[in-house]
Length: 177
Image (cartoon, rainbow, N blue to C red):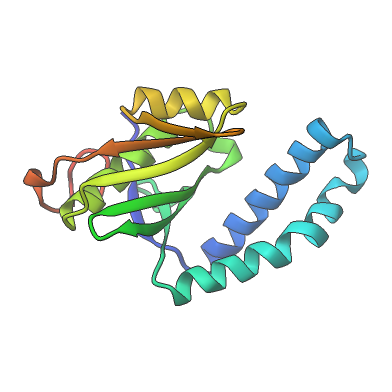
């Protein structure tokens, strides 16, 4: 399995995360809303960037966790945004694998690292929502052991119960600290 560590997101990593989200949104709008490709990134910047920056600022003020997933050499391969769901649960608000690293096992490695990290802190459940139409993400979560607990229109609510008895370092996908 691909190996990653989760580290707190730096300002430089936050910028990379925002740029990746803008590119993803532009691609989605080209595909789904018919935006002209030549205008899509500028439109995404105007429409999404202010909202995303506000949400990230609010997340930091509220103690939500923003992590970069890095390989052994320190290169970032993706980002996670997690907020408390309840006293013993976490909600995965966003997981993004950087485009050059997709389809190489990093999404699964990032989930495993997150699960180990939060379980080490006594968190016994990770929850998330996934768009019904997002087949690759649904396959990832299914393979990682997430179960559907509800559906609301286009979103499925998923969760995974964690084994908190194995508390430890839990900061990478192979249990190394």
